Length: 212
Ligand code: ADP
Ligand code: MG
Ligand code: MG
Image: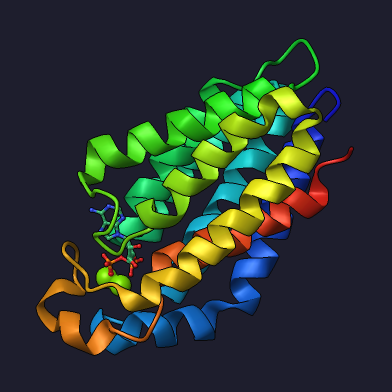
C-alpha cells in the first residue's frame, strides 16, 4: 500500500457505504432470525454518516488519520445499536494508527486491526465463541499480523479477509452468548452472526481497494 491520502479514505468509505446499502436487506434478514432485524439499517445509516463526516473533514484539509477518526465518531453517533458503537470505536482506533506523513505499511495495517479489536473488546466484552463480530475480527487480526513479515500489506489484507469470511460463515454453528440475539439463541443456530457477516463483507471490499 502506498501513502494513504484523505481522498482515498473518503473513497474507501464511499465503497463501504455502497456495499452495505446493497446488503442492507440481507443483513436485516440475518438479524431478524434471533435479533431485532435492524443490523442492515444500522450499518447503512452509520456508513452514510461516516461518508458525510469524512467528506467534511477532508474538505477542511486534514490528513487520512483524522478523516477516519471523524468518520468513526459519526458512525457511532448516527448508526444506533450495539454494532454502531463498536464500528465507530473500531474505525476511530484504526484511524489513530494511520500515518499521515508516510506510506502505510503492512505493519500499520496489522497494528490498526489489533487496535480496532482491542476497542471492540473493551467496549463490548465479547470473547471468541460468543457469536459476535469478534469471531471474525480475531482471526482477521491474527492472520494479518502473521502475514506482515511475508510482504505487501494489500496481499496480506486480502488473505486475512478470506480468513475472516470463513470465520464469519462458521459462526452459523454457534449459539449467541451476548447481545440481543441471546434470548433466542437456539433460533440462531444454522445462521451466521449478522455482525460477523457484515464485517467480513467490508474487510473483503477494502482488500479490493488497497493497491499492491
Ligand atoms: P443491536 O444488536 O443493538 O440491534 P445490530 O443489530 O446493529 O445492533 O448489531 C448486531 C451485531 O452486533 C451482532 O450480530 C454482533 O455481531 C454484534 N454484537 C452484539 N453485541 C456485541 C458485543 N458485546 N461485542 C461485539 N459484537 C457484538
Ligand atoms: Mg439488531
Ligand atoms: Mg437494535
